[in-house]
Image (cartoon, rainbow, N blue to C red):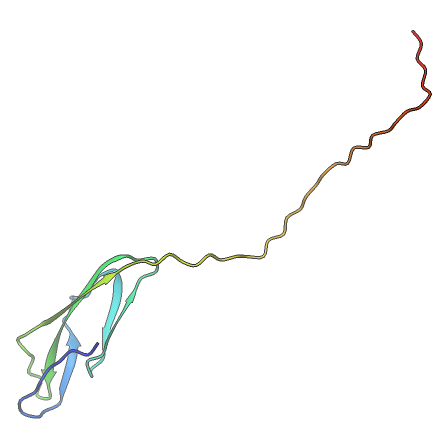
Length: 105
C-alpha cells in the first residue's frame, strides 16, 4: 500500500514512520517513496499498527498523521513429514509337535 500525500509547492516529499509508533505483532518499515511493509512475527496473531507522516524538501513535517491498523490472522502451518527410522525387535516362538511320546508316573 502507498499512502497518499500532496505537496502544493511541487517539492519532493518523503514519507516516514512516526518515532515509537510501531506496535503489535509485526515489524514495519516505510520507504521514503511511501511504500510500507509489515512482516508478522513468527506464529503471531493479533493487531499491528503504525503511524506515518510526510516531510517536504525543506524539512517541514505534516501536521496530519496517517494511521495504519493491520489485523494479523495466524494460519496453521502445513504438516511436515520427516524421515524417521524405527527399530523393531520381536521374538519368534516355535511350536514343536511331538509324536509317540510316552509318560510314566
